[in-house]
Length: 364
Image 1 (tube, helix red, strand yellow):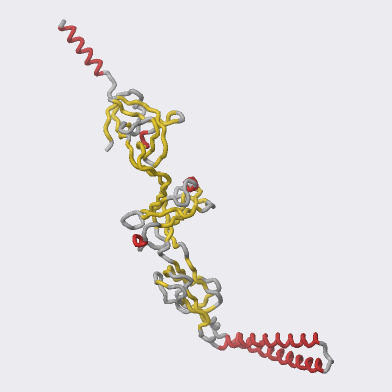
Image 2 (image 1 turned 45 degrees about the vertical axis):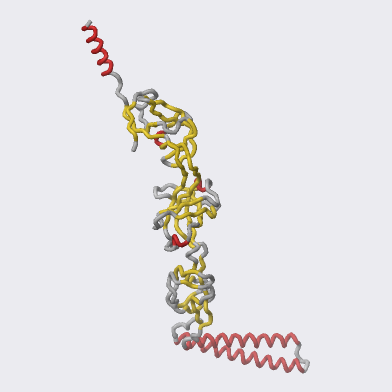
């Protein structure tokens, strides 16, 4: 009897020794918490309305005393233009200009004499009105050519009048964003002299992937972070430009991207030091809910066309079919297949199969 009992104990020990050891796994709990689906991209701030003050004509610009950051009011003088300065004195140019004046004087004298002669003839009925009109036009044209030649001669003799003939004013109240032409000198029509804008009217411009842009709309909430302040700023999408463009990523991959513009809605005093052209991180909130059943995305794996996860029941792994909803990077919404409080296995390896024994360690 004793021998039989000893044999049974030995057999039980042998069976226990050869049983598969439980697979160590890390687990997490299925929880119900707020969830946001966001798209993160770097952006930059811009002045919503920028005004470029440009030169309207060929002129000589006086030195601009304004500096970037200076406050200006609408209509305030910001730049002064003078008549174009004369070229450097050139004896040859002066001689040629003087000869053109002499020739123009002779032409003008002859034309005026001819006009007077035809006028007398017309009074006596010996010349037609057409002939008189032609003579008058020729005299007028010759006088204009003489005036132009004399002006050209004066430009070769010395500097022109330094009188200011035009003052440029600020088109809107705001701050000077940049002074493009600070020093005095010759300017051409269309040359930008300085840029003015209202720094309180900032917007954020972000390039997003086209597949993300289609999930946004005007009014989509945006959280502006990494701008230098202590807390994120609130903003909303103002517009999504309809035309996309191709951009090569840092990895050399061509991407289709779209410009999205957001308006900051936080009180201006919270971002008073934020300027134009500053880098920010924009988080577009595509979807959110206050109470969502969710799991770490790493517990999910593909089974056919669906998803599954391993839940720990006692000391066993049980595979469950799972229906998922919104995905937010490391967190995924669960629509069915799991319950709040269930313990699920993170990163299940091939050794974890349905009904296998496991030794669970809770993820911190």
